[in-house]
Length: 364
Ligand SMILES: Nc1ncnc2c1ncn2[C@@H]1O[C@H](COP(=O)(O)OP(=O)(O)OP(=O)(O)O)[C@@H](O)[C@H]1O
Ligand SMILES: [Mg+2]
Image: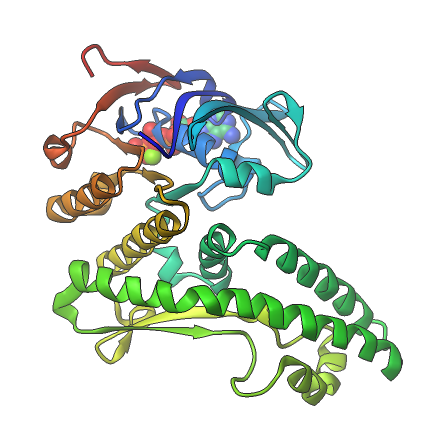
C-alpha cells in the first residue's frame, strides 16, 4: 500500500493512558472497550501527533494525565514509501517534537507527515459551533492542498497581532497606515489561497451531502472571506479604521472568514437536527480526506471515534465504505463490536481497551 499509515503508536501520560502501545495494521483498526476505558484517549494521542492539539473541547491541558507534567506520543509510520519516526511531548505551555531523532522547530513538519482527519462526538460543533472551528477545519485542507499556505498564513497572523496591539495605543495615521498596507497585502494572499480551494470543497460537499442527506434537498455551501465582497481589503480597512480605533482591534480580514451550508432554503446550523448536523460534519471529514487524496495521490489517516453512538447502522456503513474506497488507514472506536464493520473486506486488527491498557485481541 502506498500512502501513509502508522505501524506503531506509543502513548504515555495522556488522560488515563499511563503507558499504552498499539501496533496497528494498514487497514481497519478497531478499538473496543467500555465507557471511560481510554479508547478516545488513544485517538487523541494520534491526533496530537498531526496537530499539536486535542480534537476534544477542553484544550490540550486537560489531556495531560493528572499529576504528570507532560503527555508523550511516539509513532512509527510509513509515509509515501519512507519509514519515519515521530514523537511529540505536550506540556502545559510548551511542546517539543522529534522527527527521526532530530528536533523539530515547526509543528507543520509533523502535520505534513501525520495527516489525520477525525470524526468524533464533538464533530457537530463544526456546524453548530463558532467560526473558528470551521476556519481551522477548512485550513487543514488548504494547508495540504496549497503549497506555501503556512507561510502566508503565519505572516498574516503576525501582522494582525501587531496591528491589533497598535490599535489599542491610539496610533498616528501614518503609523497605522504602514500596518494597514502590510495587513491588506498578506490578508489578500490568505484569502486567495482559500478561495482557490473552496470551489473544490463546495462541489465535493454538494455531492457528499446529496449522498448522505439527499432527502433534505439541494445543498449550497457559501464562503465568507472575512470582509465585504467586491472591494479590496485595503479599501475596506481604510473605510472602517475609525471604528477599529474605537474597539481596538481589526474588524475585517481573513481572520473573520467562515463557511456555511444551506440545505433546501435553510441554514443547517439553525435548522438542522443534531443528527443532520453530524452527517454534515461527517461529510466534511470525508470530503477533506478526498481532497487530500486528490492532491497527494493517497488518503490521510481517518479516525472515527465512537462511530456507533453517533450514527445509525446505515450511515456507519456508508462512512466505512467511503473510507474503504479511499484506501485509508482507519481507526474506529466503539463500546462493542460494530455491525457495520462486518462488511469491511480489507485487513483489520481489533484492540481491547480497559482501564487505560490496550491489548491486541487474538485473531483480531
Ligand atoms: N487528565 C486526565 N488524567 C487522568 N485521567 C483522565 C484525565 N482526563 C480524563 N481522564 C480519565 O480518562 C478516561 C478517559 O477515557 P476516554 O475518554 O478515552 O474513554 P473512552 O474509552 O473513549 O470512553 P467512552 O466510551 O465513554 O467514550 C476517563 O476515565 C477519565 O476519567
Ligand atoms: Mg470515547
